[in-house]
Image (tube, rainbow, N blue to C red; front, side, top):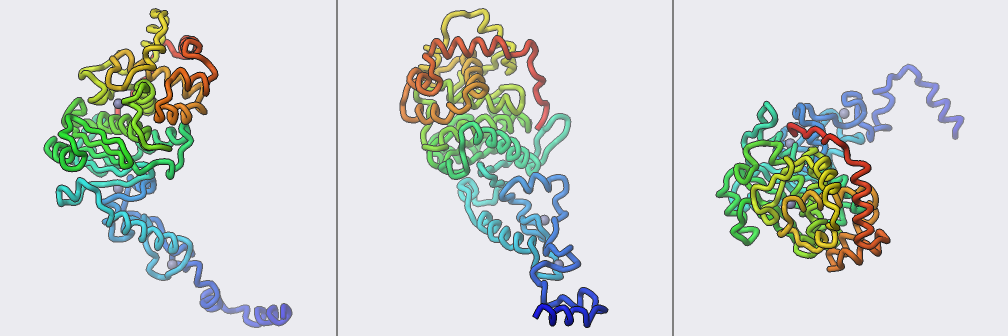
Length: 388
Ligand SMILES: [Zn+2]
Ligand SMILES: [Zn+2]
Ligand SMILES: [Zn+2]
Ligand SMILES: [Zn+2]
């Protein structure tokens, strides 16, 4: 048999590829598409990479060439690896397009919306300042998704989380208009709100409006706020649903939210409404130098009291102390973060959790934390980011 096949091949050596192969290789595209079956859609300009980083974008899905798959059909063949990928993506895009988001249903109009690995985001701002330039809605909502996902990736590492570890994607809703926000608070979140309203539970959400409460009309401020708030929401929905801010774990809830905000932007500027007695702005949001000095000056033990407080009663300086203690935990005991969080969710006290997971009592934790701050915090703070 092998011998005969060899004869057959040798007998027609002058045939070119197209004539010889039509029935043999139809699964691998055609010459036209480089045997891939589809190619990158070139309608997305500078945002192409950002589009690749999300599962769904309300605007990308309106692209006539790719319908949000980011792959343009070859049109000359119906095969090849990217053809198959495109088909799969088409189904996914349709599912997301047909999924409703509550504010859109409430307002009876489509809202700018992005769905990413951890988040379901709606933003209505039409134009926003970003550094010396302006951003449109599309750029802004992608910037929010990109930054929030970057912090969520770190969060996943710290808390040993996978997508299925969360009860659901956290919904982030930022409206330009206070009236829209108010309506969403009353009709969907079941409260008359305030400047921002968080909803902890199986489907965590935040509603806020970008002209109010210190957010100005500035992309950096709005996105930084979203990064901070999304950490509160993820803390409440990861591994086991429950908010720890109303337990004696305010330091952990607030310390974490500030930590990721600082990690990305080198500055802390977000104090949530239910935490803040308004107008808080400790040390201009640059905390390393301030903490180093503060702890050097104040020798009395801080943690026995700090670790007893709920989020709502933390004062300005305690926000920074909570952040620093979380900073110590991340740097020195990252493996303890998940069990500590779960412990707090189940009402276990700090002294028990420290003993169990750090093998130290509260005073020993404080000594270790103070020593670490004295040794590692710099004499000069990092330069804060100026834009997203
Ligand atoms: Zn082709
Ligand atoms: Zn997009
Ligand atoms: Zn496209
Ligand atoms: Zn907060």
